[in-house]
Image 1 (cartoon, rainbow, N blue to C red):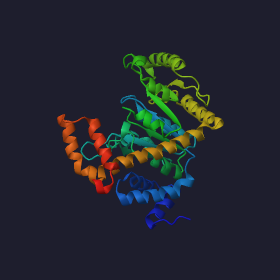
Image 2: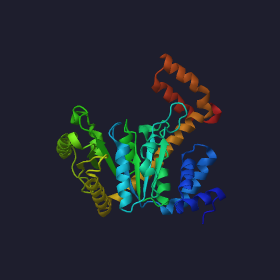
Image 3: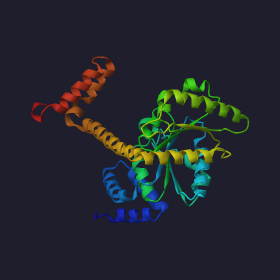
Image 4: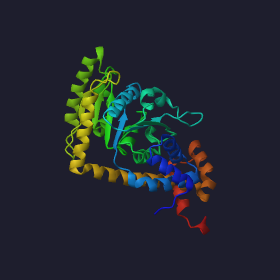
Length: 334
């Protein structure tokens, strides 16, 4: 049996008891980059691990202005009415001054944030690739251990955030808008290849007909771009309104059907195992980059090499080879 520090024992009991204040403290610990905090976080996560894995992990992405916050709040409240416990990990843009989260999503989801069975955690991107916080995977595990059976990861919806979030969830939901120019021309094929469900949002009032038309176009595009995967799933498109709640029951039924199909085919387990290995290697890559910069030989020549690259005296390839050669040299030859 693992022996925990007193502080971690308190956090462990609080998380399992559904104490949201202690859950927040645990997530702050997980997000910390301080050496001692990272050690404590891994100790806590190892203790929590047996209670994880049972939640529906859903990623939601879309361009700014697509209505993600309103959509998630309305969907979340509906799920609470169905008896679910909902955690939202809203990956906020970081402040350029403090590097902290701007916290906009929590203030925009006041109704959901006030519910006892819901938990919203804005996390700063802090420069992470694609706008997905580096510790989001670990935060998912903590929320699952706290008893949340639906964990929603909201991304900032820019760059490669869809790719990053797809590697940590079971279902990727892409929100789209009408009236954003030539919709199909502007859709990256890669995003369509990743999305499990597409929702054309703000499908209400005067925008309803245009939303239904876009749904039909997207459906035809998906038939051309995507065949059923190994699990037999074909992506579905639905018109929704985060403001009125229209289409959300149909959307949730699709999400549940997707999960059932993944589970029945065995793909849910395979997908999560692939994600675990991908997670491990991403941490190895991150650690190696840090180790390279901290290497004494590299640190001694790094400023000179960077200056040479910037001044055009050497190529980035040559500079990189010199750094790697420094790592390979035995200590007595440096």
